Image 1 (cartoon, rainbow, N blue to C red):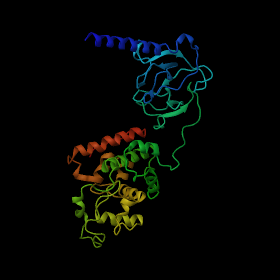
Image 2: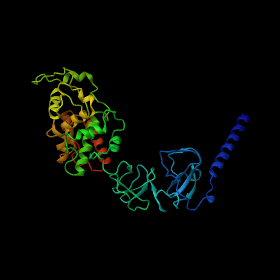
Image 3: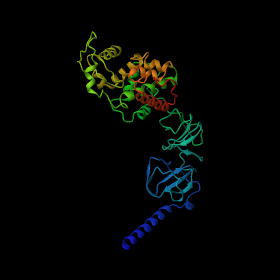
Image 4: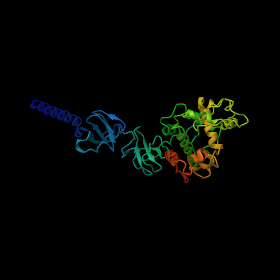
Amino acid sequence: MLQRQRKRTLAIIGAFLVTATLAFAIPASQASAQAACGPAWNSATAYTGGAVVSYNGSNWTAQWWTQGETPGTTGEWGVWRDQVPCGGSGGDTGGGDCSFTVWSAGADYQVGDVVLYSDGNYYVAVHANPGYDPTISTWFWDPTSCDGGTTDPPDPPDPSGFVVSETQFNQMFPGRNSFYTYQGLVEATASYPGFANTGGDTVSRQEAAAFLANIGHETGGLVYIVEQNTGNYSHYCDANQPYGCPAGQSAYYGRGPMQLSWNFNYNAAGNALGLPLLTNPWLVEQNSTVAWQTALWYWNTQSGPGTMSGHTAMTTGAGFGESIRSINGAVECDGGNPAQVQSRVTKYQQFASLLGVPTGGNLYC
C-alpha cells in the first residue's frame, strides 16, 4: 500500500514538473510588446502543446493538447498561457495595428461589428445575426479590413443566377444523396424562369426557401430518391385515364424531390416538359435534372389538393401554409397531421434565416 502511494506521489510531482516546464516555455517577459499576430484561434481546431494562436489582440501559447477551450477563459491554470499583445508590423493578417474579435458561432452580432474569421480575413456585419458563418451567410457579412475600412466587394453572386448558392445548398442538405446535385437543380430552373425570380429579392429567397423546405421534408433531407413504402406502388395507377398505365400497374410510385406519383401526374409532367414520362417514369430516378424538373413542374403549375400552386402561394403573399396544402391537403392541413406541418414550417424557418429573409405570415395550413 505504501509502495503504491509513493509511486502515485512521484507521478503527481512529475506531472507538475512537466506542466510547469510547458507553462514557462515562452515567458511573456521575453516576447515583443507588439508581436506579429499568429493564426487566429479556431474552436474547431485541435492544438498541441507549444502552438501559438491570436485571440482578442494577443498571442496565446497552448500548454498541452486542447480543442474548443477559449483563450483567457479558464484563469491561471487554463491551457492557454503567455498572453502577449500582438498586431504590430510583420504578421498581422489585417495589415495594421487594430483591435478585433474572433468570430464565434452563436454569438450576437450587430450591424457594423467586425470579426476575424478562421481563414485569416475580416468581415463586417451588414445585417444583425446570431453568429452566422461569414463565408456561408454572405447576406449578413461583407469582407472588410481589420479596422472596418472598405475592401474588396462581397463574393460575386452565384454564376447560375439562382438565389441559393451551392455552399448554402450544401449547408441545407449536409447528408443529401449525391443524386440530388446542385447543378441538376440549376439546370432545371431554366424550365421555369419565374421560379425564385418573381417579386424582388426577398420574395425570391422566400420562395426558394419554401420549395427547398418542402422537398427536404418529402425526401428526408434529399436522401430518398424513390418512395420507401413499396406496398403503395400498385395504388398509383388510375386505370380510368384514357392512356391507362402503359409502363405497368406499379410503375408510377413516388420519385424525385417532390415524390411525383400517379400516372396522370407523370403524363402531365411529361407533356409539359417534353419528356416520355408516361412510358418511362424511371427517368425521374435516373436523371438528376429530370427529377428536379418534375419537382419544379409541380411547384410552379399544380395546385394539387389545394387552391393554388406553391409558386403562387409564395409570390402573392398567401404564405407558406398554402404551399403545404397544395402538396398534401387534408392529409396534413386543418388538423390532419400537425406534427408533419410543424416539421415543414421549422425547416422553412431555418432556410429563410440562412438566406437572410423573414418568413412572412400564414405559415400554417
